[in-house]
Each structure stands twice: as C-alpha cells, then as structure tokens.
Amino acid sequence: MFDTETIEITDGFEEIFRETVARHSHACPRQVLGVRVGMLAARLFGLDLPQKDKRLFAFVETDGCFTDGVAAATGCTLGRRTMRLVDYGKVAVTFVDTGTGKAVRVWPNPEARQGAWKYAPEAEDGWHAQLEGYKTMPTCELLLFEPVHLLVSIKEIVSKPGLRAICSNCGEEIMNARDVVRDGAILCKRCAGLDNYYRLED
Image 1 (tube, rainbow, N blue to C red):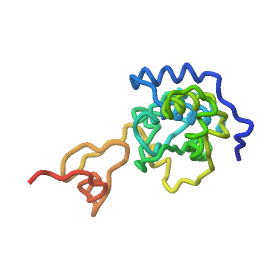
Image 2 (image 1 turned 135 degrees about the vertical axis):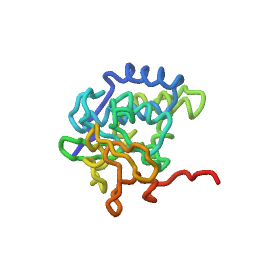
Image 3 (image 1 turned 30 degrees about the vertical axis):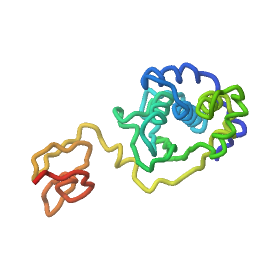
Image 4 (image 1 turned 90 degrees about the vertical axis):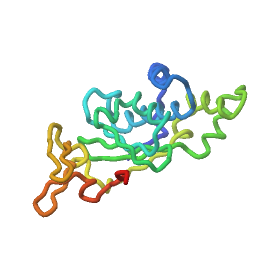
C-alpha cells in the first residue's frame, strides 16, 4: 500500500516545528515525532497538510507533546472534531482518510531512540540526541506504519454537526448523536449506564 523507502519529509518541517513549540512553550523529542508522523501521513494519503477541511481524522494513543506535534502538522484537533484520544499510553496515531476509508497506524521505530545518536553525535545526552536526531533521521529508520481496518465507524464518530437532544433523566443537552434510546426514552450515555467516568458525591 505504501513504501517508506521513497518517502522523505524535510520541506516545511522547521516551520511546523516552530508552531508546535510556540503552542507548547518548549521543545521536546515527542513533538518532533508528532510533526514527523503528521508529515508522513500527508505523503501516505497524498494530502496537503495541515488540512483546512476535515478529510483526515486522527486517533492519537496518548496526550501531551506528541499530540501537539501531530495537530500542528495535520490540522487534526479535538476542537475541529478531527482527532480522538484513545488513551493507550502509546506514542502512536492511526490516521483515517474519511474520503476513502483507508486507515494507517504510525508509531516510532523502537530502535530510533538509540539510533538518534548517529544523527546528533555531539548531543550532551540521550534526550538532546533524540530532539535533534529525530529531525533528520530518515523516515524508514524513524517511523513504522501499517494499514489497519477500523473496528469503529468513522461516520458515527463524525456524526452530523448541529444534532442535539435532551436527556430525559438528567435534562442535559447531548450533541453529535451521542444519545441512547432506552424503552423509548432519550438518555445520555451516563444515565444509560455507559462510559461513566465520575459519580455524584454522597
């Protein structure tokens, strides 16, 4: 499906990296990875990024610096509803082309951390070697990827903007078709007993 040997991504890196550093207030190796991963997605899908539409969707598997880099490179954000956090605690992201349905998961090569020294031999420590080395390391050494098949419906996740319902139990508004119908009653997921992450104090 894709061939990393022919994919190199250096043009535009510094501009995008400066943007993510400004957003995050400091630079770190995971931001570099996020930017490189996002730029790879542009090549894999043949898209101009960062996107101005909502063609590309990203499932990020961790939050923090890495995700900021992905957002800066791709234009995928939580606010634009083109990104979703699947908290596996992994520096990885699955990109979906919502136009074709194709999906690919990208993550760093486990050997890249040590391999960064080759591209930043004067670095004072491993952290700085990664920060600088990841910027110039060839894509085929830095990143791994594979096509995947989604087990969730991207159409249901994206839904239709503007859809609203009122939970018949708590009375709160539910957006984006996230309501659940039980015995004819419209409920939010919490009142339906799904996806609870908090409880009321006694």
